[in-house]
Image (cartoon, rainbow, N blue to C red; front, side):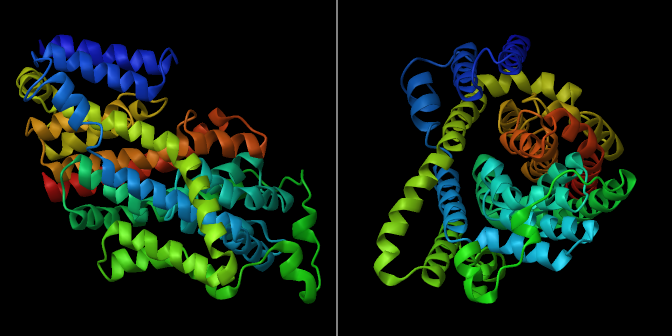
Length: 428
């Protein structure tokens, strides 16, 4: 029966890759089929309806709320001009020096990446940052990749991601945070190397001009024309991170603290109610797709954790899972491309189910599975041509997502290798 379940998983991957079914729908259908194959009853304890669908759907509720709050904070960064101000000031500081401008946009992208992910993060940093980089001669592919690499630098400190791994793998947030801190230096070094190497290797290409960057309005009308936020409001992205990382505050209150700080530092009291509601509703629109996906992931995790599924899959998965430290690093490094194109190791797809199997069957400790999936997530978030942030950044820069994938993949592959090395030598 384990072989049949694996074949069903392969069919699910094929359905997602060929766009026959949306990812969320495919995961739910896959979960129901796996539950029936695991001899789960229709109703009652350990059943399809009560355990897989009813209990699985809200299993990642804390992650969904964190995603919503992160999206809300992202909308506030956009509407209040905080994100735009950060990018403009970095561009002004860099002047006409391409590498300095690119490194500045990389830094802002990393800051934005700690607040929210996916396409909203790319837009917040890239709407001004991408044309500004191209205007000073950064090649288009490098400009798009710079925003994505910057977001990946911020992902290890993205609080909703902490909550997701904590809930999905049943790990304390402190444990997740500890590994993410170890992963951060690899992401940072790879991102800086990408900017330095790619901007110099490709040379300077002057193809765009950006009037808003080249012209400098007078100080009197500067804030009105460019929408600059007050300097103290620019600290907003650091507020939730400081609360969660520095003061050990829980994730949801930390994100709420960032929302309140952004509101108080940028909004007049009489306008607060309208801005709160407007940006909250906007946050719902941004958060709807990932929340839908997390509902499906919760259902899939409930299915693969059923006793029948665990018993059927354990001997098969154990037989092909490397236990030696060096083999673990080598095999899972070579498998990195399987997290691309919504592949089977994409943690926001079938990869979540595979991670659930590895934990439920006891083949690897949950912390080791965290290291593997978090390392793969660094690759998916930058180089997957089907991810929304990659598609948006590439199209906005005027290149194809596949060009961005080819240019960035060596760097994020190295990040995954580093994360897998840390995992193997500390957790196995």
